[in-house]
Length: 136
Image (cartoon, rainbow, N blue to C red; front, side):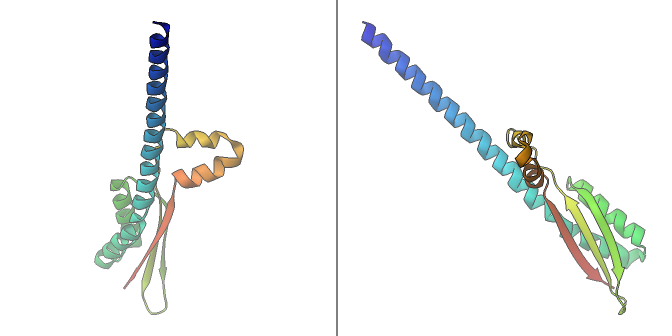
């Protein structure tokens, strides 16, 4: 009789370990997907630069171009870090937009509590991309 109860305890312990391992794997996968998604969405900086170029072509106003880029990034859930417009001697205006995304992770951000990893975790969870578009 005792050996039967001992076997049940071992079975329950194995099930608990399997559930814990699957939960950890699930959290890691979800965090990886959030980070990947943030990196993908940060690439919208190029589209925002094209939006600025298009607005400038219509209005010939750099402020309106910046607002167009900022609005595009806001709709995409990104933050505009930097915006520049430079005119070349041939009259071409180049718009440069830098955008920052944020990855909302379940557990990965806790690695930032370790002082040596803080900067790395910040860079990984807040990717920054720069997009450039030129036009007349």
